[in-house]
Structures are given as structure tokens and as C-alpha cells.
Image (cartoon, rainbow, N blue to C red; front, top):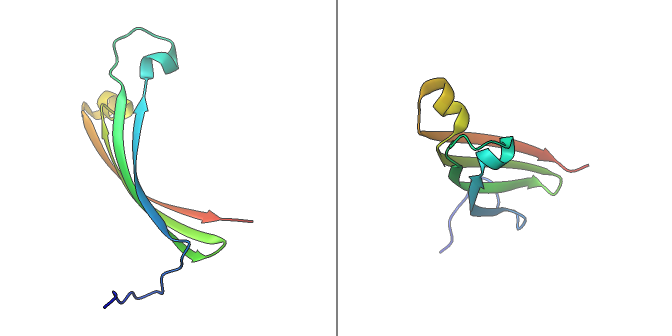
Length: 87
């Protein structure tokens, strides 16, 4: 027996994990010893119509440069909702 969803699932929906690594020292051309940003992301891409998408995602980032400088934090959690329109 299949799940009942409030909105019928469109075959263009997709989901997945992602990983990121940002070499800060290479980016700014420095040997300052700043640690690289690293992170994981999971997302779900809802295809509302073939041309309209809503993409919620969650990211966990280790050694985020801006959070480390502004608030002395070594980790950051980011919840994001993107809207995409294909013209």
C-alpha cells in the first residue's frame, strides 16, 4: 500500500545529499592557517509544475568563516528554501 501525499507526487521530484569543502586559504591567497569550511547538505526538490520548483534544504557546516569571526562559532546549521522558475 502506497503513501498518501497531500499533493500528488510529480515524477520530476528529486532528493539527495551533498558535501562541500571550501579551501579558504586558496580562495583569499593567504597562508593564515584559517581552517577549511566543510559541510553536508540534504535537499528535496518539489516540482510544483514542470517550470516551478521549491527546494528546501538543510546544511551543517564545520568551521564556517563568517560565523567564526562574528560569533566565535565552529559550526553552523542552515535551513534554506529556494524557489526556481524555468523560463
